Length: 130
Image (cartoon, rainbow, N blue to C red; front, side, top):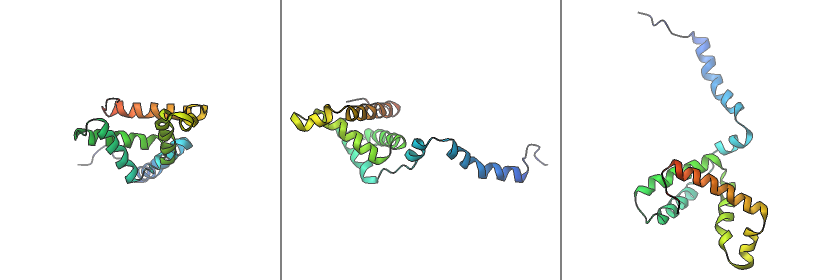
């Protein structure tokens, strides 16, 4: 018995070979850069440990926080993640040191964009905001 819905071999091969190229060409340059997924393991571990600490060290957050950092890594290059997260974290510094992170419009924009990305990842991974 021959299956009636088989594709000709040349057509099937061309579809398999060209499919990855078509999706790569369709993605915008920023998305292609983020697809590199260049977060080092140590950066992921730091994020997960800090996230777990915020949630009383509960073991269930190991998986949830890992999910969050994976989603962030899909959205940002590691260098951008570091710059944006530092901008957000240091806005609460007192005095002149914190002023550099609070007063500069571009830094505030970076911090708010990171906040949005992290909030979306938290929501998708069922991690409550703290």
